[in-house]
Image 1 (cartoon, rainbow, N blue to C red):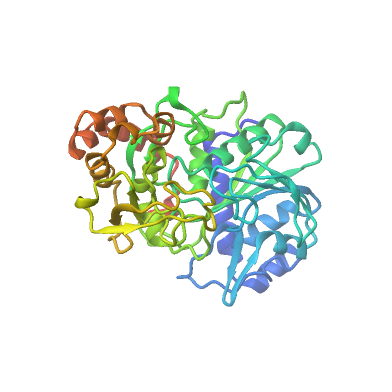
Image 2 (image 1 turned 135 degrees about the vertical axis):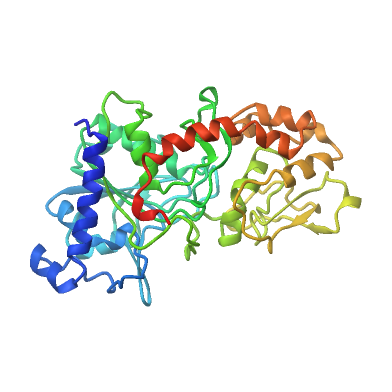
Length: 416
């Protein structure tokens, strides 16, 4: 079952070869014996296609198998006039789906952050939906006993405390323990153009960070899976048997627009780009836009100095945040909805809010902040009055070490 790095990379290369050789749709039909490409529109040499769109590469691996799909609202195949959900595509090709595993926010992506996701039945397809954010976060042996292959397809945003990569890691562990192959349909990472932030310390491992990587790690979910598998970061004796279907015609430095919210409180490109910086407010009593239509594009609190700010807003209960911080209170803070694109984490806003907190003793939610930062040191540095440059300097050694590890697992087709 152990899969060497060379074998792993060869598998990816084989898929890239298959995609090139099947660029002509009619040839793919003749070679496969089935019309595996009818869900997708023709792709020219300049057009990006996510892993899910590369149906010729993975449909043959699913035919005649009982599969489980790890998916949510982002698991779609884009077309000229919209998109087809991966589940619908598989069912239309008579592929046997036994169940769907749902991550945080649920299969339809509507559950509030941190709220348990319930098991259920999908109203449209009648498929069983098994929660991986409820009674268990890792598929159990019983839940996998009738499964031949697991298919994983979820849009990530490249931030360590965004829980989809934790779900991926636990799914990989479960597949390794139960000798079930895993197919990962890769997607671009909208924050893949940089690596930055504090590196998680092992003693602070949680579902908000399961590996010792920087806060922003600059990898797609497929590349990350390869890294944790080959570096021995899975909590298993064996590695997972993993096949990755890569993205076609995408570069790490390219901008990538997410037409579907990856979660309820990341509504647009600005929020996704600011999330690594403003997400640290999740470990404080500061509101980061939840309860407004500008989630992760503003911050504020009723206990920030009103004289220092000319911007204010009032969070209310809404989609994705039934009980936002500072609900129904006038919050004083900063509007970042037109902020320029970030290529690093900024601590400026966190330091600004702490400096202008009328009640600094209620600023941090220490346990939550430590889990988000991945270290207890950052809070101490802020409380001690460190500047942003002084704090950033303490990250560099660990970032340099990570970059050397990361380099081994980057798909060359994604590089500029």
